Amino acid sequence: MKYQSQAVSKLYFNAAIALFVAQIIFGVILGLQYVIGDFLFPYIPFNIARMVHTNLLIVWLLFGFMGASYYMVPEESQRELHSVKLAKILFWIFFIAAALIVLSYLLLPYQRLAELTGNSFLPTMGREFLEQPTIGKVGIVIVCLGFLYNVGMTIISGRKTVINVVLLTGLVGLALLFLFAFVNPENLVLDKYYWWWVVHLWVEGVWELILASLLAFVLIKTTGVDREVVDKWVYIIVAMALITGIIGTGHHYFFMGAPSYWLWLGSIFGALEPIPFFLMTLFAFNMVNKRRRIHANRVAVLWALGTGVMAFLGAGVWGFLHTLAPVNYFTHGTQITAAHGHMAFYGAYVMVVLAIISYAMPKLRGRVANSNKAQVVEMWSFWLMTISMVFITLFLTAAGIVQVYLQRMGDQPLPYMVVQDKLQFFYWLREGAGIIFLIGLLVYLSSFLIKGESDQHIDVSHKNPAIKS
Image (cartoon, rainbow, N blue to C red):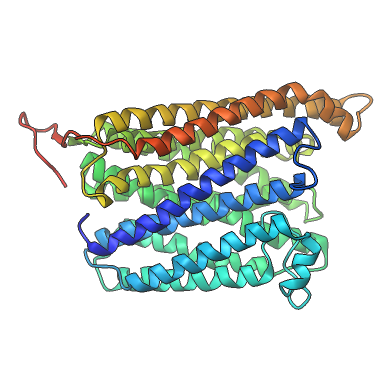
């Protein structure tokens, strides 16, 4: 750890992992409710479990992004963080607010929660992924503004690098686009139109900038490749992400009442969206192949490589499968969409956050890398989570194909719930894979408890080993 203020990132990383565990537990509960309809009812109804599961995903990734920023920015800017005190205050505000929101979902009827939190004054609740109480959304904005001020002042007063600039651009975009969560028109078409400005332009727009900067930072630190080479790759990836992602929003406008030209624009640019993820895969493997040193933290490199591959498969390949309007006409809202969402989020964002945590945590604890034994255990967690996620995606894809045929393409389409009963086999398989994923996550946690010595970096351009920072 080069700068003392980087230590504040540990708070955010610990919170991110804790919330990640909670998210997966609720995912397992949801999976059981697909096959045992009254499981935990009325204590945790299906709609509440789903709301908690998806909201925890967003919140813990935001904690991960913030922790990564507080670790990366001082090192990239070559100066201490602008205000460690502000970072700690914002952490506790955000963490307590997130905990209270989740508890309120579980303990209060949603309508009652809306009445108690000012939704009648400024209606913002009731929309998927944006279910947070209005007062909670205001708190998120305050935290984001304080966070941007802290990070921005650090970057402005220090060294400017491509990684810092791209990261800051993504974070500013994240904050600005979240303001559309407060736009809730009565017209359903307009509501969905602006709703996608948050949901799509986050995960298929500005979040990709954050992803690119995090991936570039880890690869620079673990491979020793010249920064100029990395910068060129980042510029290309960011340009393609924004070009395809912004106009590609139109692949959500196909059948909601928007003008028909979105059928063409959404299909064409949606089909191009796999390109930046394919470039990320090439980028990661190219940097490792050109590396000047073999870093002691081998598992961080593994997470980085996995990010490129799984992001391309989940966001790219599975996204392309149903992004064309003639195909989306049949597949929209089916389990094929769920299959794409699971692998895309895991590959693009979960894995890159785990990569930066795996790289940074040992340094925050005073060593170059975790012990070899700890890294082997963490590699087991990598494969358990990644392979189980592949099978979750495959099982949901199979369920989606059967669903589309029986519910939307047959001569006599079957009712929704009748079709759901016929998909129980796939849902049981998905549940089994989900439990293995949870086991993999617990193995990941256990790897940080294993002590021991690790090897140092090996400079592959020389015969003698050399310790690198």
